[in-house]
Image: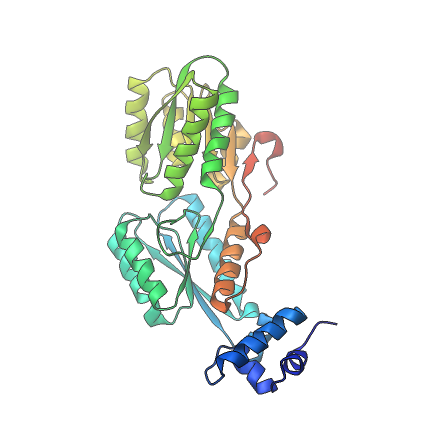
Length: 343
């Protein structure tokens, strides 16, 4: 049988009320008594049912997902998944809200983060570039007791509590292996396209990609990163200029958004059929591109798992409970035409 609070009280020689005060960190208990109760908990192997305790005292959570308002399909999918989780949040007594900010306006992001404590949030999952302003804003959230999870793109130099997303260094290395093997032994330049190199995910993917290129495929030359900022005209212009200056390009690593503009531009230039492309995230467009052979592979992550994991991690940190690392690991998945999942 699992030990109960009655067993703890008997083992420690105290009342049930004292056990309750110790377990809920309420004042009025001597330090020696706190130590005795905690030692009894340890000896008995008691594991608290936090969900039941929260239900008994009517504990509710309020969590924010702070996500850029960009038009890319991955961001849209992320926002839609959060909205679906919000609709189902009542079962876990969790109110979930999506807050968006202009992707190119860090000051708007900082203002949104600064408003979270006043709105009664317990925690926030944030997808944002790691700027000094964001670091200061997250520090301020921590000082006011909010828990913070970095979402998809890590914020390792901030005081965030956890990162939920794939290992982006490993994702970049995976892209390097795929492109290197697809392109074969003939020397060629490789074009690299990103949304913005201010995003940590872009930096890490590029570093992982370059590591594999240098080590295993030195005959391939990754070119400087083109930043499209999810603007179709900017992407088209940058790709056009790059291919004009580097006509021998045979491969493209698209490590962010902007893939609709990429395929449209390559098609208009007559370069789509003879280009090897590896991209990220199984959006509707990328799925069609893989199915048609325009893209050779897509490196992706399960967006539903990302959102559910962020919520579990935020609740665990709010309750001071441990995290199941295996359950919260987001796997890197590689999709090609031959294993394309059904819609």
